[in-house]
Image 1 (cartoon, rainbow, N blue to C red):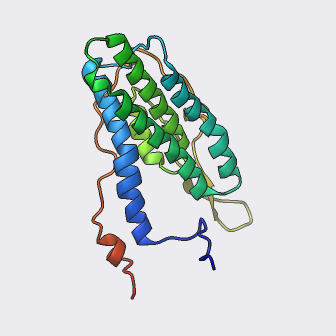
Image 2 (cartoon, rainbow, N blue to C red; image 1 turned 135 degrees about the vertical axis):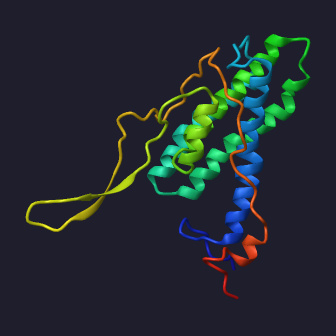
Image 3 (cartoon, rainbow, N blue to C red; image 1 turned 60 degrees about the vertical axis):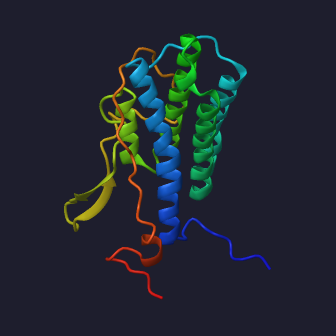
Length: 219
């Protein structure tokens, strides 16, 4: 007999540590850091791409198509599946960088810049896909890619007063100035980049066994 189905409401500290260390730090954080760092070190700005090859088009197509897939899953409240699909794009981008090896391309700067531009475009796309889950980190990635201002406004609880009635809390936010849109938007060549800093420090793996001090795991 199959085990119980995992739902979006399930939570364990072990899974939290695993996803933080292996998906956020090793996969997403590593993609952001190495792609922006290479472009920053070699160009100081978003590189201008040359002729795209099939491998470049394939990754960009997968990145663009993910907006429909992830958006549909979010609309159905299938949050674990949604973030899994977003992380699939991250994995594909890491594989692309490992296979194209832009750090070794020294005799063809146009090709190197094309690879780096492609990688940064997918970083930008993946940042949008992950914004519903990681709004604080999304702001940092937005700035590292040369963006300014608010990427995604954060909701806040405000007390509302009505005449003749009690005060009550309402979730609100200043969303008019936010820049995030659910779509792939082309990055602009020559946009100055910032040297990225690590997004996600790794957690002590024993946290998955003990839980934090304020919420220890009872055995």
